[in-house]
Structure formats: structure tokens, C-alpha cells
Length: 419
Image (cartoon, rainbow, N blue to C red; front, side, top):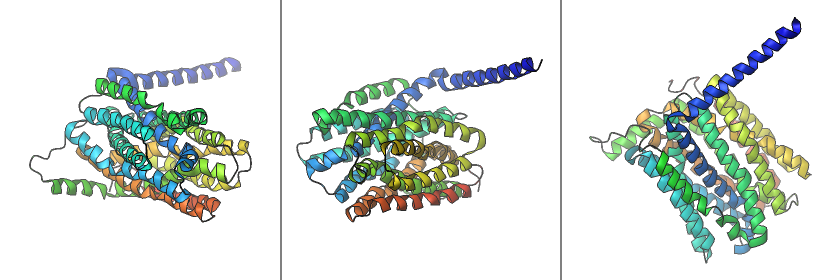
């Protein structure tokens, strides 16, 4: 009798789980939405994964161009600055001319930029390619998120989480593949293998993404100045502003940590370049699971608490890397540190929902410009401290900065758009 009851309860739980997955699959895939999610996710995989190839190949690039670590940090920051400055134009383009044109053009030009970097005959052309890469991938960044928020009004957290996880498939695999190819054929070949993927995704986005996913911005009787005031008014609203400050602290840590983790492991801990790139890959691989999980938890229980918990994980793991003495410990710590990336789906969902519908693209673009631009100072700071002989101490500073996100997350209003 007892055994039948237990079996019945177990069967009931399994049935509920199966029903939940069927419902989720239907919600995500039906009416052509699944193809949109797929191609936007693969585009994010390529753009984000390629951006993290640069840190993985940084020791080789630094040697090729005879750069100091401070200059190398500035090179990485250049990508992020260009990426940040393109957020508002990308959002405005989506609001005015539609998401399909903006997204397809952005991902296509990103591929062209990689080709410029690979074929660059001198360092100046190399830098030009990095700027184009940052601008084009930045223009892709805002509308890919707002489009999914529009297409999945009830499943935005998990849809954005799945897309973020796809990005981390790229960051977990592309740097490792690039390092392996570079070890045989050089860093240019290690970067260039992604170019055909960008072309294919640009075509796919053009075929499956709707011309518009949100209402066009109405500026018929409004000057550019008045439009700007409306966007700024939305951004200084408390939930949006506090969310922006929270994301700024985490973005500063993210850019600096991911930009210099491989170099730190090579220069300070004596790892090979391939092993160091693998640690970065493990960091992103764990996020493949953690980001959709964080998004799903946020959809069910709210964003604030899960953001605070993942900020705590960031503080502890980033501050622990200077104490690493073996590859095994570094691998475990890298996997746990991937919780840092789970912060972003609930943060993006919360802030996007806090913005007026007609200003989502431009408003979120402005936010992304601010927190990514400020975060771009992170690699420069770490590079400067490393050149001064304080590479390990730089990780302690990053840990302290991440600690501010814990309290800020809990200061957010319980529901978006609340005063």
C-alpha cells in the first residue's frame, strides 16, 4: 500500500514535469517564434563567443604587436567602448526602421569586421577592425533582447536566458577552438574561422524575424530633443536607474575578469595558453545551464533575490582566484564563477519590463551604453595594476566592486514600473 502511494506520487511528479516541459516548448516554439529565438541565439553565440576569442588569444596578439599589458587592456576596452556607444543607435534603429533590418545588418557587418582584423597588415588596421566589430555587435545587442521581450511577454526571462546560454556555448567553445587553431596556424586563423557563420546567420535573421516586434516610435510632432527627454525621463525612473547602477558594477567586473583571466593564469599561475583558454571556456560552459535556470527562477519568483544571490557568488569566486594553485581547483572555481553570468537574464528582464513599450529599444540602448561604457574601464584598471605588480590584488578589487551589486539588487522595487 505504502509502496503504491509512493509510486503514485512519484508518477504524478514526473507527469507534472513532463507537462511543464511540453507547455514550455509550445510557448517557445509555436507561431514561428522558435525560429526567431534560434537565429537570434546563434547570432549571439557568434558575436559574444568571438568577442571572448580576443582575450583567449591576447598573449599571442600582445607578442605579435609587442604590447604592454596596459596597452593590451586598452585594446580590449576599445572593443567594449565601441560596443557600448552603439547601443543607443542600435535601439533607435530598431524603434524607427524595425528589428529585422537592424539585426540582420548588424550581425552581417560584425562578420565583415572580423575579416578586417584577420587581414589587417598593420596594427592601425587591426584597431579599425576592432572598432567596427564593437560597433556592429553593439548595434545587435539591444534589439535582440527587446525583440525577445516583445515576442515572449510571458516567457521573457527564460527566452532571454536561453539566448544568453547560447551565447555562452560560443564563449565556452570558440575561445578553446581558436586557441587550438592558433597553436598550429597562428592567431589570425584562430579568429577567422567564424566568418562564414556570421554570413549564414545574417541571412537566417532576414528570413525569420518579423519586420517589427514593437510599435514604431511616434516622433511625428516631436523634435529629437523632445524624444531624448522622453528617453531620459524613462531612464531616471527609480527601478530603471537602480537597475542600471547594479548592472554597471557587475559589468565592470565581468569585462575585467573575462578580459584578463587567461592572461592572469598564464603570467601568474604558469598555465599554458590552451589550459588558460579552457578555464575561460569552463566559466562560460557552466552558464549554459545557469542562465536559463536563473531566468526561469526569476519568471516564477521575481528577479531581485536571484540577482543578489548571484552577486554573492561573484564576490566569492572572483576573490578566490589569486589563491588557485592547481588546474583542478581552477576548473572547479571557473565552473562556480559562471554563476556571475546568471545575473544578466533576470536583470535584463526586470529593466526591460520597467521601460515604456514604445521606448524599449532606445531606453534600453541608452542603459546598455552607460553600464557597458563604464564597465570598459575594468580591463584598463586590471592591466595597469598588473603592470605595477599587483595582478592578484586586482582580483580583490573586482570582488569588492561586485559586492555593491548585492545591496543594490535588494533595493530594487518588488515589481517593475513601480515608483
